[in-house]
Length: 211
Image (cartoon, rainbow, N blue to C red; front, side, top):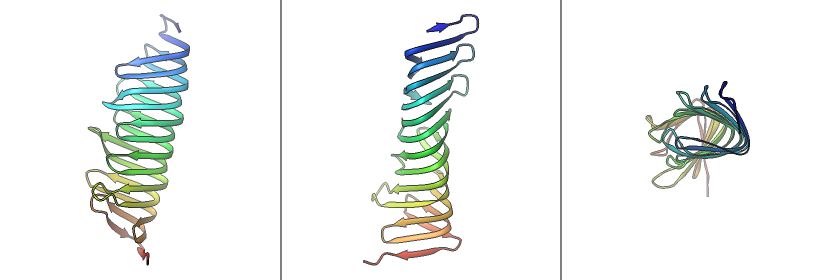
């Protein structure tokens, strides 16, 4: 580890470990700015501990962190891991305080809400460990498991907006919803996870599976 006391810059390689409060990050190499309160780490990066009072456990190829307010962490390349009740596989993610944005999302899953999805981009925020809102865009494919009867609803389209306060998911851009025994298509579909209710708006069509 090389540290310049005048500039506050540091460089390190080989089993690098950075600790900040409840967060630990390890990597092959790193560079940091002590005065700027920031760091960049790359090569077999692993981050674990707590972030915004939630458990975090991630791996990626590169990570940039800023510990100035608001604190932020950005991970790039084969990102995979968990934060709170959520698991994620994507190309990159940036978390600023309680907000997040991720791209090329292979899987985003929230166990407590029973929601899993894939999409091009997702952004949202978390309040008191609960997923409060998110907006997913680009080839959105979702699966929602009802928390009471464990029934499954699948919804797809171009854009999805979830609101915990409203208790709904709005899918637009050629929306399709599939439940046991029926398929609904429309320009826009509003789905209520708590009741499994579907509202189809704009050229709605419904088909039933005949056994």
